[in-house]
Image 1: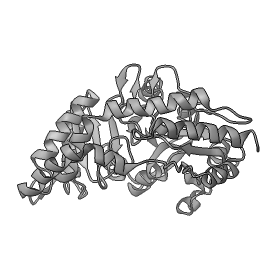
Image 2: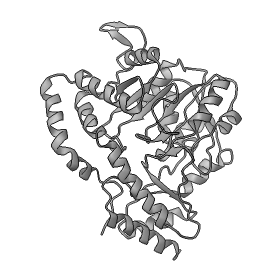
Image 3: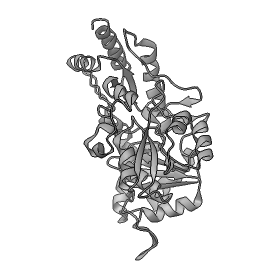
Image 4: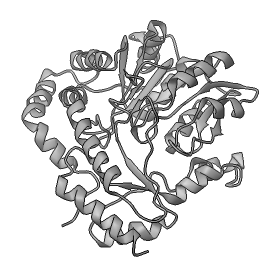
Length: 368
């Protein structure tokens, strides 16, 4: 019995009866850029996150780029970023002409901390991008406090944290701007590329709406040098349907994670740790093992699909060779890249499949 990492077809099949009429309505409307369907999703997502404004954009990377542009990050500026994130967090900074400055994470939660931010501060740093990695929120209370003290803008990368909470409050409004990816594999995923931004700041929201639309509020009048990055109505209608089941599907993910936490055991295995005050969205269930590659291969041989998030840290990518950052300077990011392994998890992973994963992992670990 093979176990897929994530079954997107099963997800679509469950929603098809509601999603297809909604998407057909959008197609028949004749309105294919922004418009009422997008506005309806934006209102619903803002309400879900408990914030005042949501702005639909083309993808998660654009969400980060637009957020940095909105707070006027540009050439000569520096932005603190996690050393162990997906490269998109760094790319957004670079594409604004600024320099990403890596911050090593907490080894228990894999998220950056207020202490790490303070230690990484240097002249020219104007903002920090905490990433809620794997779906677990970073400590936004402490991060926002230190950012205020250091006069830094806080731009959250919440691409993996749809529905996660920190101290009982949903991620979406702790920092100045929160950036979302609605890539198909996300907890709240579209049927193509899509992204969003949330904020409680009305001035930033107005600026972001213009920046996503060529910097224009009125056609042919451009207040900013913006982007063409607009959520389309077909994606918006699907996201609206999926938003209605997000909490239920996150609960299913949490049950899988609970079974893994209760059942997985073996020599040198490191399981996820959830910080006090955090409720994870369980976008990913990431274990660590010093013989990760051998474990992954044996799981593949047993028909269990795993993934590595992420095998090469940003500082080691060719794109950032000019920064000359070494593995010795960022030892934890380097170690995590060699040891992390994501096990199958999702709202459609069956109980027999999750138990198969547990028994197979345990059997392999005790045989390695």
